[in-house]
Structure formats: C-alpha cells, structure tokens
Image (cartoon, rainbow, N blue to C red; front, top):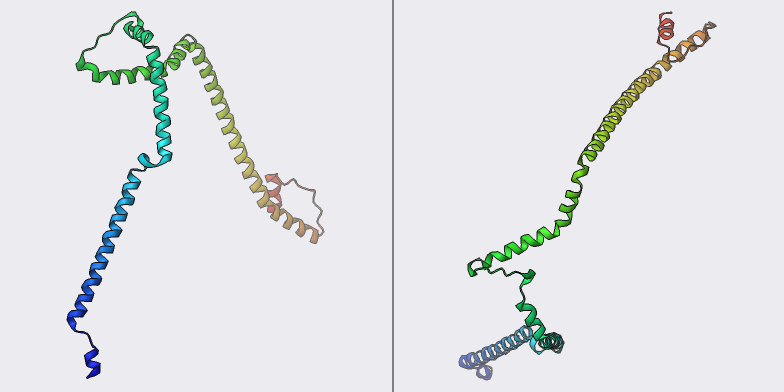
Amino acid sequence: MLNVSKKSASCFVNFTRLHQITNMQAEIYQKNLEFELLKLEKDTADVVHPFFLDQKCHILQSMNNHLEAVLKEKRSLRQRLMKPMCQENLPIEADYHRYMLYLLELAVTFIERLETHLETIRNIPHLDENLMNMSKALAKMDILVAETEELAENILKWREQQNEVSSCIPKILAEENYLHKHDIIMPPLPFNSKVHIQTINGK
C-alpha cells in the first residue's frame, strides 16, 4: 500500500510534460531570435562594421575632393561646356537618343580597327608584288612536293630491294655450304645480282 501511494497521479505527469514542452518552445523561440539577430547583423555588416565604414568614408572623401575641384573650376568648365564640340552643334531629337548608344559602340569599334584598315589601304599599291611573291612561293612549294614524292618512291624501292636481298641471303648461304661440302669452287657472286642467283638455283 505504501509503494502504491508513492506513485504520482497522471495529471501531475501531464503537467510536468506540459511544463517541459513550454520550456522547449521558449528555448526554440530564443534561438530563432538569436538567429534573426545574427542574420540582421550579417546583412547590415557594411553599415555597422568599422572596416566597411572606413572604406565608405574613404570613397566619400575622394568624391568630396573631386567635387571641390569641380566647384573651383566651375567657371572654366561652364565655358567649355558652352562651346560646341568640333565647332559644330549636333542637335538630336529625344526619340533618337536611345540609338546613340549603339552608334557610339560602332564608332568605338571602328576607331579600334582603324589602324588595321589603314594598314590594309597602305598595302594596296604593293598587292601585285605580294601576289607575285605568293605565286613564286607556291611554285617552290610544288617543286618541293614533287621532290618529296620522288624521294618517298625511291625510299620504297630501296626498301623492296633490301627485302629481296635479305630474302636471298639464306639461299645463297645454303648453296655455298652445299658447294663447300662437295668441294666445288665457284667465284663469289654479288648479293644484288638476280641473274647469278637464278643461275645458281638452276644448277
């Protein structure tokens, strides 16, 4: 009976669980809040961090110096802006302003390639001479190609002759051994003579 009376009632167990759940939810809320604060600090690091603030201060200081220089030269700049560029005014209607960017890109590209175009124009009087040089070079190349082909054919023929000679050597050696065994004296024959080889084979 004493052991049974020590057990807590079910309502108190549920109350304890509810209290634990509440504590866990509070902890989760606290962690979410800390996470949001860290995220906010990361997003606003360029505003509150001293390193980024120093960079921005340096940029603002350089802009301020530039504006001060512009203000000092305000009168001369105004006079320069009032003067037309290239001594001519080029009024453009507002509807065509959007095409000016494309035209400027074309102008920049043309200026970049201007030196190449000028070099091409300078070479126009020498075209005949260049064509003659190219023709001579092509003729020399044709001659070299023909000589190379002839050399390749000679090499192939030489290989065939060497193969024939190497195939005939064992026969000649065998015949010489045969003649030595029978004490037959024959004059030495050149290896590359087909007629002598055929005569010995006939004997």
